[in-house]
Image (cartoon, rainbow, N blue to C red; front, side, top):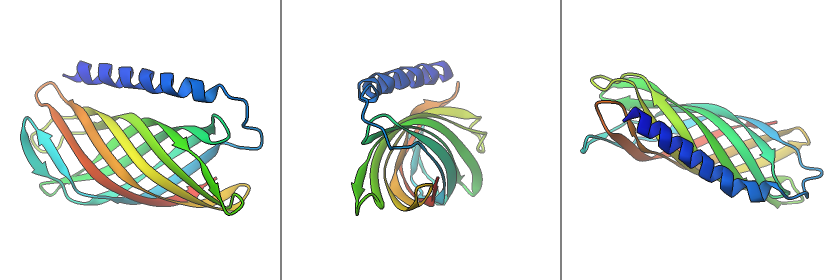
Amino acid sequence: MRSMVKIRCLVSIVILCAIIAPVSSANDISGYKGTFNLKFGYYGGGTMTVDNSEYNTDDGLCFGGGLDFPATRDFYIGVTFDAAQIVLWSKSEYLLNAGLLLKKRFSMNEGRVLFRPAVGIGYAMINEVLWVDESSYLTLQVFNEMVLVASDRFGMLWDIGLFWALSGGNDEHDISGGPFLMMRFGLSM
């Protein structure tokens, strides 16, 4: 099971790169810089399916960071690293996720407000939770990010979106979950 999750993640990353490659070949990015961001926020409860049985998770915290690189004037390619608290049966554990993002940039108010819808795929891992040994997942994130630009080097950001563990598990269990609500705020530099 674990090898199938890794193969699915690899195939998904290759597909995303194939989609991103034509976008990143354009030469109209002069004046636009890459950004580093840190985020902290709320991770909503949802449903996890373990071997066709559904279990509800409670709300938790999430935090992470990422790097966004301009591909064209209006598109960014990013990498993200997140940790989300999963609370199941009063047991808390952190799901660690690393992913690739594609963001579209919309500028308003003379560039002082940026609206960036994003979609990303990733690979996540979580340690043992009660009777389920450590497991890994193919993940999907869809969110909208708003940045209030304070200067050329600093901005405040907010995002809201959904997170899915599309498929995964371990050698004993097939596990999936979502959607889980994410609401985060942070800094963009």
